[in-house]
Every structure is written in C-alpha cells, then in structure tokens.
Amino acid sequence: MMALYCGVAVALGLVACSTPHQALDQLMFRRDAARLGRYGGTPLPRRRSLRWRFRTAAEIMAAPLASQGRIYLAGMDGRLRALELASGKLLFEVTLGRMTASPAISGSRLYVGTLAGAFYALDRRSGRVLWRRDLGGALASSPAVSGGLVLVGTSPLASGPILSDRHVLVGGSKGTLVALDASSGRTRWTYQARAPIHSSPAVRDRRVVVGVENGEIVALKLATGKEIWRFRTKRAVIATPAVGRDLLFVGSHDGRMYALRPKDGRMKWVFDTHEPIVASVALGAQRIYFGTVGGRFYALDRKSGRRIWSVDRPKALLASAALVGEVVYVAGSDGLLLALATSNGRERFRISIGAPIVASPLPLAGAIAIAAFDYSLYLFD
Image (cartoon, rainbow, N blue to C red; front, top):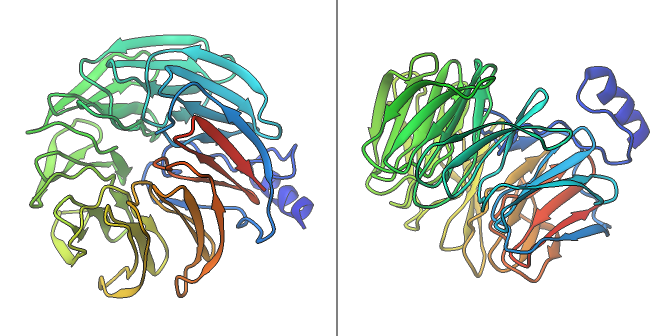
C-alpha cells in the first residue's frame, strides 16, 4: 500500500519516495504560507515504534521541517542541522546562533533567523551561507516566502520564517515587518507595527496577515507592505494566523478565538475559552482545532464557532496541533503526544516522550517527527 502511495506521490511531484516514509515537501512552519496546519500523507499507525532519536545540545523550541528525504532542525544550541530522514544520520550542521523559529524552504534555499537578529539564506543541500542580514532584535517568528519576498517577525522573544512565491518578510523587535528580496536579501519594504511581533506572518491571495503584541491583527499588501485593515483584540496576539479562503482564524492572550474575513478584517464569530491561546489553529474542511495555555483542546465548527468537542489535558498546550486526515495530533507540556479522532476527540493512541513538547509535531508519510525539551528529535513510524 505504501509503495502505491509513493508511486502516486512521485507522479504528482509531491515526494521523491526513496524511503518507506519519505516526507511530503513541507516548506515552512504549519506546512504552507497560509499556515493551515493540515498535512498530507497517512496517519501514524496505532502500532508504532521509534525509528531513531537524534540528540542536540539544548532544548528544542522550533518545529522541524522536512523536504526531499531530509529533515531540518533549528536549535537553541545555535546550530542548524540537516539529517537523513530515513536514518537520522547527520548530513551537515552550521553554527548560526540560537534559534527558536522554524526555517522556511523555497527552491534550493533555506531561510532562518536567530535570536541575535541575524537572518540567513543558505543552500539547502550543503548549508553554505548565501547571504546574511542583521535585522536588529530577536527574530521570533518563522519566515514566509511569497512573490519573491521573505517575511519574518522579530521580537524580544522567539518564533520563525514563511514562504510565498518570490518575497521574504521579516518582523522586528520594535514591531516591524520587513520584506527582503529572496534572492539578494535587500530590503524591499518595511512595515512599522505599534508593538513587537512574535507571530509568524501568513500569506494568501497577495495579503500578509500577522499578529502583534499589543493585541492587533494586521493585514498588508504583499507587494508594498501597505496596510489593508487592522483588528484589535484585548491582549497580545502571539499565535500565527491560519488563513482559509473565506475566513482566517487566530487566538489571543485574551482567551478568545477569532474568525475574521481576510478581505476586510470583519469579525464573523468569536469563541471565549477563558484561557490564553498561543498555539495556532489546525484548519480542517469543516472544523478548526487548537489548544490553550490552560490545557484544554477544542474542536469548533469552522462556520459558526460552535464547540463540537473538547479534551482536558493536565498541562499547557503551547505547541500547535497537526491535522492528518481524520486524526489530529496534540503535543503538550506534559511530554505526551496524543492522536485524537477528529470526529469526537477520542484518543487513538499516545506517545510518551517524558519531556515537555513546545514545538509543533511534524507529520510525514506514515510517520511523525517530535522535537522536545530533552534536547532530542524523535522519529516514530
């Protein structure tokens, strides 16, 4: 069955299946520029085993990224690593500076930022640095690439980059979002926000949407950085927006999940959890899935915001959930990864890591990668 899947996937240009669980081409944090948190492939089987474990020298906060038989990991120990997906073998490592945000891949290049404010473009095969920009302040959001630009937020804290066609966007510790030329690293435009940006920018339909520490959600024109609209919540927006065709979804520290129209920022509905939300939404066809700092995980109706089901966990849910078919993966600060049925929230199985998980899990084709606070990256299949 997996061989049939790989043959179809190769024909569609999704993967190059040289291993039993070759990754789909995950290009950025939350998989794509719209940050949907929805992944292809097949869910992890109920009977699973640890394929490999790779130990780093510090806690891991950034979600891993997988592409073309490799898995990339940005670490708090200052090193960016490329591992062989099938075996966990180290292919290269580059010392750049402490990183808490996931990289982004576009073509032959990988983009990543550090807490010291350095933003890099590297050759994804060798790790060679192609260019570097010092942006000032910590780069706390994951980059996006679109329209020849790279976009990324910076702040006193930490996050990662995003991709969309030809641009790179980057936010600053003083609340700026900078659009860099993806090829040269030159600044194309800068947007001055009213507070620091910890959220990772999302891109869809030539609009960039990002959260701001003062509680604002702003939408900008991708080509120019001109503000389109601004929506205000009651507390900081750390979470990354998930932008669907009809609605975008983002949680706030005020405990509310907001559904807004991407075109004009008008609110369609709001759901109050009464607990801060820092994790991003996993966006399904009919439902959205997310967790809170208080440890409750929700499934809401996408159109109305009505609660379908919820599950209580003993500790904070800081990692964003990942959706694969009829299974949603939820990782928690209690060191557990749960596989829940999207229909009713019932637990299908769990994986115990034994250390807090704050990085979002990365589903692959019949496998899953989990980065944890015990300095380790795990692959289960």
